[in-house]
Image (cartoon, rainbow, N blue to C red; front, side):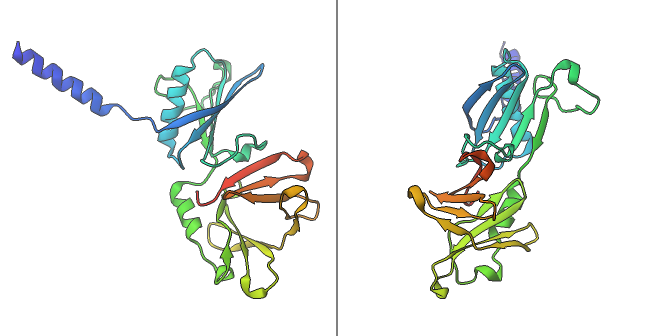
Length: 231
């Protein structure tokens, strides 16, 4: 009797040890259309592909009745009301059976075909970008360091106390540390909101509570992207 119990106990322990822990996540928005169900999934950081697949599998298993499931992964501090797809770190889509092709080789934990793409920078590349400190920033008052996952660049607004003008400046760095743009935005403080106009046509950004929010003049005041500093 004892001989039979011990092997079974070992098998149970092995099974528990092999189970993969799914990273923490929350779902902040569910949007249903005639063709798909879209979920905004808030994640705790720049997760790896396998970790995102684990979350995707879990949500799919819990939402098996939802047709054409699409998951939009969002980093902390980002605004799920932004209009642009570049507001997301990664996207997972479950295609219809009739749409599956030979290129669809990714399966979730239950064998369902899924298309998972990471749009943003990895944690390692993001850490490298955030550590960049070009000569332009020496002695400057840095407002924040914001990673633009759409362009794979670092946006750094700052003020120069030494120039006495109290102006805000913005530089943008690529992954090699090169300055790809320098901007002196036109500041508009009407209606109690400080808007930093960064293009001649009127596109602007706002910075509040360590979140940089980007607006296009075409979107009637709706943001198309938001970025939390230091992530």
